[in-house]
Image (cartoon, rainbow, N blue to C red; front, side, top):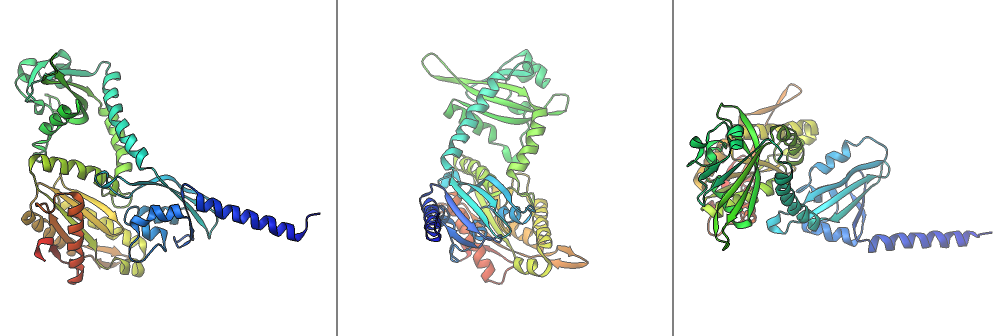
Length: 429
């Protein structure tokens, strides 16, 4: 027979083995209650979360991740099963590619009504590899899937059309005589904000050997369609650059379906604003364009005033309506080429391409006043909304996204300290 003492020794041995596993595990392991309060975590979890730890310390997992993954708390609270996987390999973008590209994979398992286990893994290298593969796949897709609905044309070094195939006429409706001597703007639709974007794409192709993307196009008869394009560099026998070959194909049906998927991947599920990860992707492109063409970029950081009081007084559903209202109002104030993103919790960031500090202050004040005059219905009671805003614009000392975000955040802090519901420019103090 096995004695009680042997049973206790066995249990103690298993417990020590479990602790050893947690301590030596190559992934981050965190045990919390349903509200995110941490009661156990291993060294790897501490290492992965440390870049996000603020003054409050590493006490609550959801609060630690709120600035980069505010949706996790909602995922947990909306999970109604008694146990099971709440999310699996949910990606958390801790920093942009320009700042190191740290990405964590997050899996949350509900053990019971009192315990959650979260597994964190650094997948930064995997994400970077996937990004490179997507670029390669885009090129291969443009080669292997061109069957019938395609167009081939040639461009000079300056991007002027110098050859035009019958397939190009079928796709666009323009004859060779109408197309030769023009540019891709003949049938590719660009906004006023994208006046330099075609030159930028040709530059990318020249530097990398090829460039691929989708364009909104307009047939000569007037209807719109989406075309996938691959622009490849032409070289002479002596490797001298001589122009480009462009291949277009109609992908309208696929584009509609992929846009629906893109919205799921790039938009904040609650407000419809751009999510944090996609904001960094867009910002990288805008800053590359700004540096190439010496354009300005301004950043607005805004925070809903007294948002905790709203949640505490009227409940989280009304708080959600406040956040959605802020985004809706902002979209009515901003231009088509501007971007508003939910940065975390009740904080939003707005990117204004080709806008200097004077213009940014005008837009920020218009945004603040528009929100101030609005309200949200809370069961018959009107809740007034205000926001605090910080503004920063590019200059010689603020030329990177990180510097602009830091400056705008500092200006936002001063706006709050001045009493909230105001706009502060980083250059004013």
